[in-house]
Image 1 (cartoon, rainbow, N blue to C red):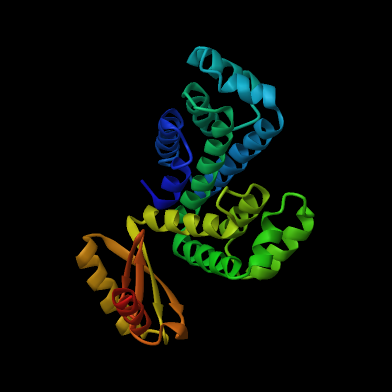
Image 2: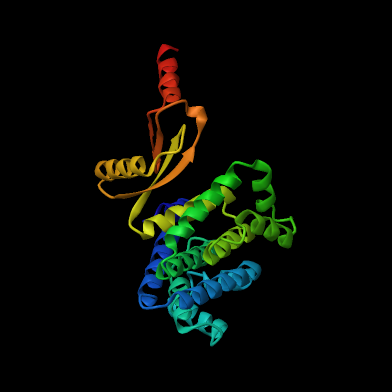
Length: 282
């Protein structure tokens, strides 16, 4: 399970966790031979359906109503989307609505989560996943470092076009199309923990698609290519899986490195050692 998806599942009860995993598996099954363009279409259609269900409460509740049979819910979904979506999208939607969700709102969140994963798979098929991962991570750090910017992008009352212009300025012209789409979706429908964490989770999901973990490394000066490679090799041996480095220069740590892999922090900085000494003396 990816770190990003784990973050979504943490907000779900058991039934919704199982439903989301079933829908994600169906995405993998039906898009095994899909092109990047096919996946872009799937993502757009899933997100549009999530928008519809987000607006239409009665329809949302009906499609997530566990008192109805799975076949009944599938039939309703089929009548709703008909020929408006591809057969691939239709298969994913039918899996979603035939599953049991703890709350109708979780169905909407699940569809959005799978739509975003489809975009990452699209980038992977195009050989652009590394670039998307890096851009998402960097954008998350920029947003996280500016509380005013985070509040603006997460404000549901703020002008949507204005927020999009801000995103365009942050990403400039060089950003990958998938990065732009993912960022725009997240700003349009922020996750509970905020825009910055949402972007970082998407970056982690991109890394997991390459069967790697993400290590955030803070150092007082930039690491050379040789140092980066030695560090990545060392972390790979420690964690017994490939590690992707996300590097930050932070003069405030004085010396050494601060490394975070998931919830685990390895603090080898002078500042960290002094803090620890202070805690022991206190």
